[in-house]
Structure formats: structure tokens, C-alpha cells
Image 1 (cartoon, rainbow, N blue to C red):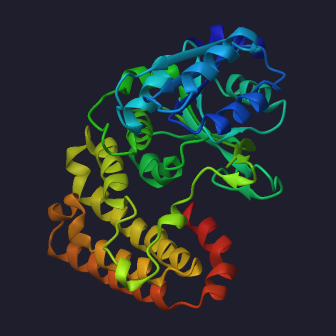
Image 2: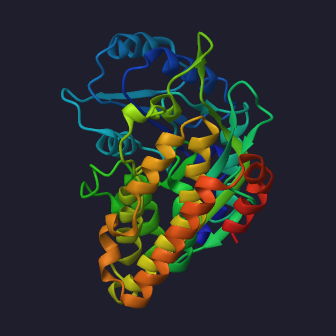
Length: 358
């Protein structure tokens, strides 16, 4: 779309598709849809891809379609495809200019969420991919910050490398439909992080990254006072339940590595080192301490054993010096994550998170 064409558009002209990968938990989805229905922005559609739910999702959606305020586009797989394919299908269903992704236990925060987003997108010449902040469904003053400003950040491999981890949480990711279609592939459908591949590929190949600091997402809907699920509930806490863990980080970082380097092969060693560096400085020790904070030292130890550098398949392309530096980071982060007092970490966490984004 040309700049001349963009200048003639108004907020009402920009169509936004709310894309929701659905699997069971229909009671949470119904609450989410009720919240979405309060939007003051008219040019919306809701695209739901159902990954062969075993509950009454189909029947409930068919009932809702009759009276719902926005168009409900619904597709149901007859056999379970997995998260990545289901997410991509929800975006493939979209006919809007942008796909705004939500989990089926998340919704929109504020009646003007989409009108504010549309205004920003138009004011900034329709950037390609971005993310916003979220807030807790009950405690709405608790903002989960990943966007510190509302602006277009830039493009290219260096930008993708710096921001790839911001795409791990799927709710509140925003893709221009044309950019998604250009990079859509089934190559990462078993990764559980296909959105990271899509975002890094778009940014690395010249698509513009933006951030939007408003908390547009209501995170973790409650139904009967319960959260849909939490990884913390499954952590091993007794030594009899011990197992090695990796928190999905090998898969998570592999798709980012592929997205950033697929057209920049000469940069692979440096990108591999920088990804591992960020994991061992910022991600890995945070997980170790989070597990301990949830009375799951056994899980922390399992993560320590399961995230040695050689579990990352791209580690092998590093030279001896690179491997030595990565092992040094791993051992240092392990010591800090396993033995740093939790109250010290909590005081430093906001500062560390801010530093990680610089």
C-alpha cells in the first residue's frame, strides 16, 4: 500500500482480525468473546481455529454466531494438529489488514483498545509486526511490560536478534496480514513457537518492528475463580519426581536462530553466540529463580541439568573460544540462579528486565 493511499485512510477503514487458536476451555473463550464484544471499533472480525476440541466448542460457537456483534469466522480441524498449525490457521482465516492474536483465555482490555491500535498503525504508515503490553484479568493495575514505548523500532537481523524473546508470549502479537502471508510456512509446526519464527523472519527480511505500550490484552481470564492453567502446577517438587527440564528453550531459540539467519548464513556463528548469551544472562537464571520461588528447587536442578550448552543444536557451529565463553556463562548463571536469595532477585528484577531490552 502506498503512502498516498495510507494518507487517505481513516481508523474505520483499517480492518483488524482477532485471531484465536482454540482447544477446549470453551468457558474461558466465551468470557473472552464477551469482553471483546464491548469494543467501540466496528471494523473487527473474530477468527477462531479449533484444534479438534473434545468439549462443546463447536456447539457453543454456532450458538454465538447467531447473535454476536462481530463476524465470527470459525474453522474446526477434525484431527488435532498441534499449537503451531492451529495458530497459523487462525491467521489464515483472517481477511483483515492486521491479525491481533489472543490465547483462548485472554481478551481485550478497554473498550477503545482496537480503535487506539488502529490509530497508531495508520499514524505510523502500517508497520509490519509488533507487540503490546498486557494486564491481569483481575488485578488490572498489574501491567506485564514488554513494550516500553509506542513507536516503530526498526528492521533487520540486529533488531530481530534483540527483540525475538518478546514474541514468546503469543497474546498481544500483531502481524500485518500481508507480511504473515509472505513468510507463512509449516516448517516449524512442531516447535510450539512458530510465532517467533514468523516475527524474526519478517524483521530480518526488512519488515518494520513496532511496539505499543498500552496494555491491550487482558491476561489469564478466571472462570469460577480459577486460571485456565499454569506451568507452575506441573513443576516437580519432590526428588522422586525429578526429571531433566529445558523449559522449551532449545526449540524457542532454534526458531529465532532460523528466522534471523536463513538469509544471512555468514552471520550464523555470531547470531548463535548472541542468542545463547542472552539465554544464559537473562532467561535461564530467571527461570531457575522462578522455580525456586514456587517451592520447586527440584525443578530448578532439573533445568540446570537439562540446559547445558550442548543441548542447543546450533551450539556446534561455534569455534572453541565461543564454546568456552558459553560454558562460562552457563556455569555462572547456574550458580546465581540456584543460590541467589530470592528477595534480592525480586528487588533487582525490574532493573534487570529494563537492561535486557537496551
